[in-house]
Image (tube, rainbow, N blue to C red):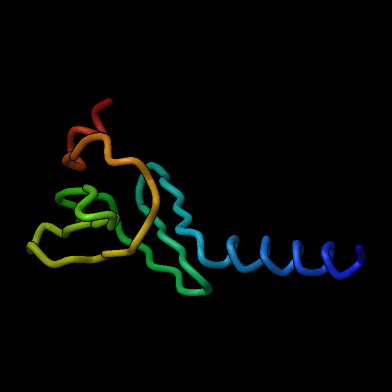
Length: 86
């Protein structure tokens, strides 16, 4: 039984570390996976969308700032200006 508890804790920790996490404030977006944190100002974001199971943030320069595999449901593409007005 103790082995099951230990394995459960290790599995939970692994899933948590691999999960794509994000924080959105009034001025910036932070995306974290593993211990890698990426921060971008909202004014530099052009689009946020899902493509083939990947979460993507494109900049105004048409560069991919973030492209990460995720299991989030694809719902809708948003331009940053639309999100900031809502």
